[in-house]
Length: 142
Image 1 (tube, rainbow, N blue to C red):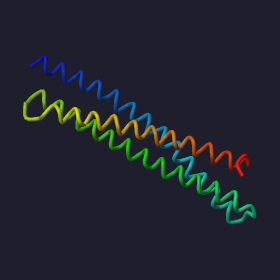
Image 2 (tube, rainbow, N blue to C red; image 1 turned 30 degrees about the vertical axis):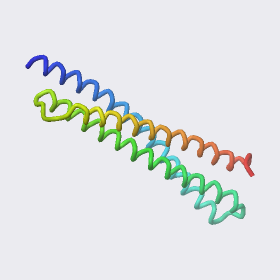
Image 3 (spheres, rainbow, N blue to C red; image 1 turned 180 degrees about the horizontal axis):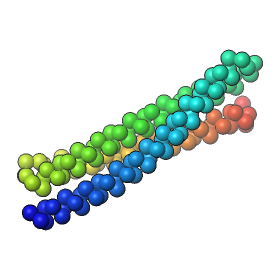
């Protein structure tokens, strides 16, 4: 029984590190999303009174696109956290009973990694869109 408890403690410790890193990633996404939403509001207000509407409209469209990409990144990260949680709970249950199939738990780990990777790809797309919006703002892109 003591070896099962040691295994559970190791599993929970590893899972805490994973969930902490997911939390840091969420903070990063939240900061980027908050900034993008604030910028969308500013551009929209400026667009209503400005005479340079074409440039502002392009910048606004790019910022709205950023918000949509970040929304997907959040969703994929949430899916990763859920998959990791199911894996952790399933692994604990597997230590006490043999009713859970280990291959299914491995599938949850694979999904978790794919979701995190996809979320990071969305973050990279956001960075590229942010650069494009900046280039429009400083009039480097026509």
